Image 1 (tube, rainbow, N blue to C red):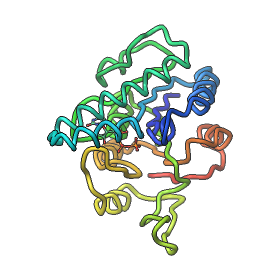
Image 2 (cartoon, rainbow, N blue to C red):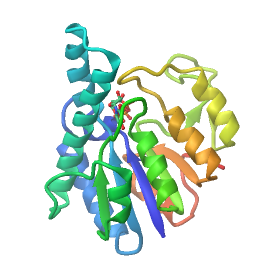
Image 3 (spheres, rainbow, N blue to C red):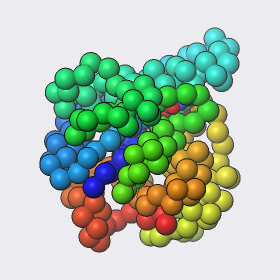
Image 4 (cartoon, rainbow, N blue to C red):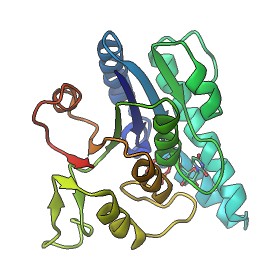
Length: 222
Ligand code: UTP
């Protein structure tokens, strides 16, 4: 079984680097890699936002801000690799190279401007014909609108690809914008009908249940 994770930067670096979380997540990866081939694409989180905010003050253009964001994702990917005691000293920089890796746990960050690591992870899932794509974020479910702002936000335990795209279309897309899943990822999972779960990345028991196809808390996209 092949599982691709998009590990949100908000997990790895919410305000500062979350060493404890990285450590727990790498232990979890080692455990599941006994049974699955695992790919992880790591997000930029606060690292990306801090650098991009300063670059914008210097009037860097959006392309350059994306490039800076990509470096931040790779920096976070390096920390996950360090906690995994990886033999590699740099994360894969292309989907093609990551797809060819014989390692049990394959780690990478971003690739090109105009999408986020969610997009990379979905394309990687497409290229390796993954059985499961899991987006790990800091919310439990996909909602029709921001649950922090709207009390009547509707949560989805299941959602169709088109309905998800409709919700995402209401969001914005600029360097370091924060969305539940990026549109490139949503379009990729739709065109290849990739089984996708969107769930909180901090509950490892729940995550294990999801991978074992047991009952879990989160949104299933199909
Ligand atoms: P993230 O994937 O972390 O995006 O990449 P995000 O929207 O901030 O998501 P979370 O909060 O981590 O889940 C950080 C930034 O790096 C650039 C984008 O500007 C993105 O917003 N980036 C990243 C790219 O341009 N291309 C990539 O392949 C990856």
